[in-house]
Length: 298
Length: 245
Ligand code: SF4
Ligand code: FES
Image 1: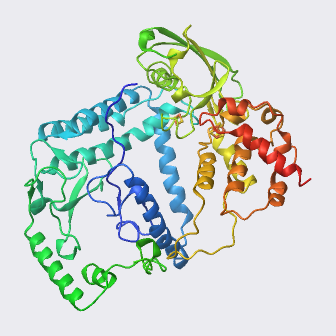
Image 2 (image 1 turned 45 degrees about the vertical axis):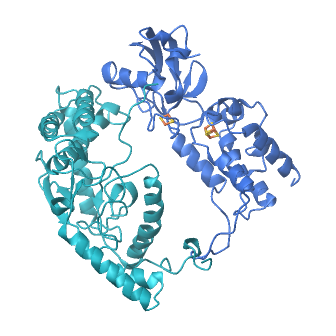
Image 3 (image 1 turned 180 degrees about the vertical axis):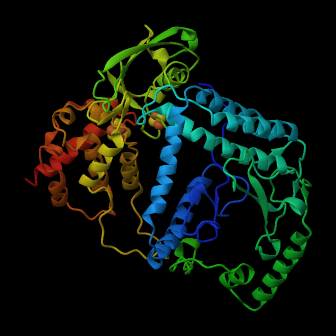
């Protein structure tokens, strides 16, 4: 059996707020690997997906239930009808293309590009050429024709429908990686070896306001160190001195140390200290002191 | 056994093609030639066929690693997972593929195991039955590690359906709960979290469509890719539930 590295986790997803609800579309909840919910950072090791699924399933699941119970909605059936018609028309359009591109070839090329140029070791030249070629593939994929014209159980039709969407995701990944001129977590740039907290401590957000565009709109969401309990620092991974520090890191660390010292002196327990450093809330009684984290067994 | 010496052979796949939605169509075997590569599985060969020879060929897979249970099919007469079957294991290079019986045929090699498993899960009420309210802040009641192991052992079922398609009773009785269903009951019967009694299980499966339908041919255990102890569990359940008659 050939053994080789491969992608096993996607570190991006639908941007949500802390309840798991989309920041853009009201009532759309996502969790686990489908979401960008901030439970983990910019890297994933084996097992992260399980903890993410379990923890977010429990918390987001509860917020979602609450949302459903407290929101009555009336959906105009014509909206549903229009959305379905649009997709049905699109499928007909694919079926009616008399001849055109081979969707399997396009998909294969996408896989090669992502593997060779957007894989483990990245650099600007390769990423740029990946973005360019992926855009060409996206344009070509919309001219794919299928040999069998039946609508059910037609694997080539499924690919013709889905591969353009896969390409859009691939472009988001490659384009975002190309813009990010640093190395961080699983994103490793041969031409920018350091983690650059001063300029890049932010989340990449992509959107396609124009569905026919071949590049997404990219924006960034800053991450505020001054609200952190554990400001960015060297944590023992890799070589030392590979980080361009953000000025807030040391500032916040000092603040955290002071708050901790003061509260400890006042005899506050770890829960009160946690609350002073980074307050948060959770649904139901999830925040109550829990035997699993040693309460009652200290 | 498998080695890489067979690389480069010309393989002949003979695949049953049929679309039940197309009333005029007859089921036919179609032949495809594929050149064998190192470590080739039937799943890889099927993808090559679909990508280069017949874009229209329907078959299912997700994980290609024997975990998701979606690629079951009948390979030279035996129900097997396509992603775990090496072409090198077929010395004469002829491989015949048919969809698994006992399930609704979607098309060609695709069958609806999901629907069957769903019905089975509802039928055996495949969830923990308990009235106990657990306080999230308290530790759970400990479970004997051996009993937990035994429960998880049976929980390894990937719902591939190979056992069902190799079971003569399942073929004769469409309502038979099947080896996978009996395994599921055994799983909850062991689990101390579930409060159901033997009388409750008897209500669910105490008839010829349940535990008493099994003729002990045991083809299920021969074909289970997870090597679940189906024979032992079915025998155990039958002994337990016969006392409820
Ligand atoms: S018991 Fe074995 S053969 Fe049957 S569905 Fe489960 S894993 Fe597949
Ligand atoms: S593809 Fe998942 S078990 Fe074969």
